[in-house]
Image 1: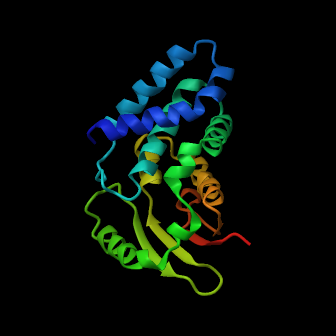
Image 2: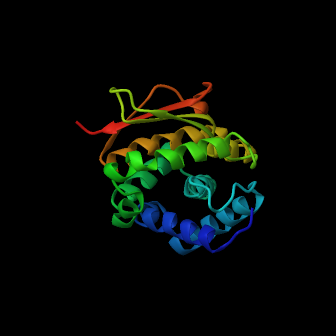
Length: 203
C-alpha cells in the first residue's frame, strides 16, 4: 500500500490522542514517538491496498497504528488498548469525525450502503471487508454482517492476530460516542463465521 498524506495524517492523529498516556509510561517520549511512526510507516508499506476511498480505510490505518504501538511500547496489549481507548474517548476531533446516530442511521443512506455491499462482494481488494447490510426489524435500526474483516486480515499478515480482538472492542466505544447502542454476539477475531453488528439508538 502507498504511504500517502492521508496515511501520515491518521498515524499522527492516533499518536496524538495517545500522547498523554504514552508519556506517562515512557522515559523518552520523543524516541518512542519516532519509533511508533517509523513502524507504522513500515506496516503501511507492507499492507495490501484496500483503496483510499474505502469506507473503512481509517479503521485499516487504526489497526496499523495499534500494531505499531504494541511493538514499540513494551506494554501488554490490554495496557495499550486502555491508553488508546482513553485517548479516543477524550478527543473532540474524533467525536466530530464520527458524527452522530441520526446521521449514521439515516434511511437516506440505504442505497449507498447496498452499493457498498455489492462492491465488497466483488472482492476487488484482497484485504477489504466483505459485508451484508441488514435493515432494522424493530429490535435494531441497522445491521451489518461482516463476513471478512480488513483489520483481522492485516493483523494476520503482520503475525499478530491476537491484537484484532482489542480493535474490535473500540467498535463499542465509537457507537457510544455517536449516541448509539451496539449489540454484537460474535466476531471473526474470536473465530466465528462473521461479526454481527446491530445498531440502535440509545434508550
